[in-house]
Amino acid sequence: MIYKILDGEEWRRAQRAGVFEGSAIDRQDGYIHFSTFAQVAETAARHFAGAENLVLLSVDDLEIADALRWEPSRGGALFPHLYAPLPVSAVVRVDVLPWDGARHIFPAGLM
Image (cartoon, rainbow, N blue to C red; front, side):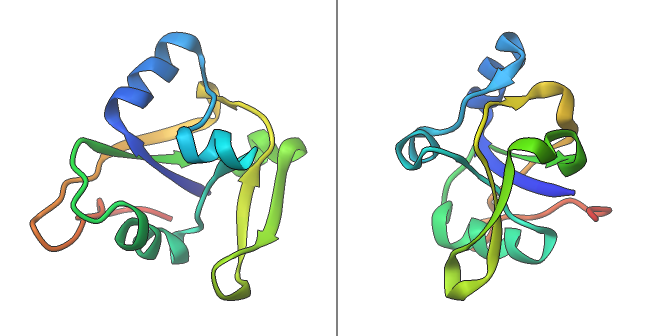
C-alpha cells in the first residue's frame, strides 16, 4: 500500500474523470508523488502543514506497478513515483486528513 495526500476538491474531480492526473507539483515534476506508510506523516508535516480539506488516498501499488518507480528523495530514502495517471480503481481507501492546529490526524488502521 502507498499513500497520496491531496486536496479534497482534486479528489472529487478525479472521481468524476476516473483518473487522477496529479497535483500541480506532480505535473511540474512529471510524476505523481506518493509515500509509504513510514513516510506519509513526515510528508504531511513538510508539505501540507496547516492545510485543510485534505484527503489521504490508500493505493494498491500492485494495481499500478507497471508505471511505478521507487526513486531516492528525502535523505536518500526511496519514494514511490507514478509515471502515469492514477486510475481511481487503484484507490482502496479514502480518508479525511484533518488538521488539529498542530498536525494532521491520520486514521487508525492504515497499513
